[in-house]
Length: 336
Image (cartoon, one colour):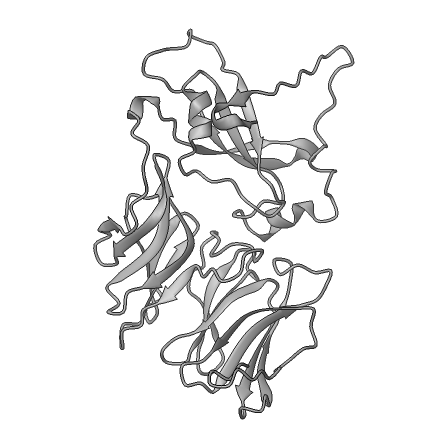
């Protein structure tokens, strides 16, 4: 705790290797935080505590303890009710904790709410600050979803965008939200969304690429078989150029992209490096290999203690096969 007047510091707790997401309730009486210890990562499992702030000397009494696998993004609403995300169902879902201590799953779909906590400060939901609204907006998978907190009903906001990131924030009057949004033909940018209608406005206009749609290939999410009888996912971009057509029955050359990680994920937003190749007859596969996020806890954990095994476990090639490795230079001195 830091005194805003004097700058004096008081340590509340110090018995864990890592801490994150400290949040104070609206009434100033409670503090919530996450903690975990090496060698665990926060997307594996962690602990969450709620403490009552006794005084400004740093005395705090722990009143609640949570341990539901991987937890993240805790917050208090204007009524001091607790919201947070955990993956006990196998997916990161958003929960509301009632005054009686019951947990209500607000997004019980098989879609992820949020991202791994290797970046701090992001929050994939926001509770409407308007008194009596009983509403939250959640980034649920690739959808922007409104949740009625009383009826526990959900409605997808049709914005025209297909990807949302960084977080959600309400306007002061509760009628709009702000989110970073993009899609296959637009770069991500800060967008204002009217919650009731889905009407959008670019808050910070991004310099979009002026390219005819006949040259832009949009991604399609695919599932494909891989080694050990398993499967993996990826975004597939097929060749597209309105000036040319491939011979009937022919197959395009394929460029395969692998994201960093392991717990990152591919994105379907506009990528002009990919368009450089797809407009010239190449197909591009942006792979979400096992261990990537966005497909539930089981898929995310498939790389645990198997790094370098499941990634290299492809069927062996015949001894007579020849493997060729190409380095292709693309504009701006980038290479892939």
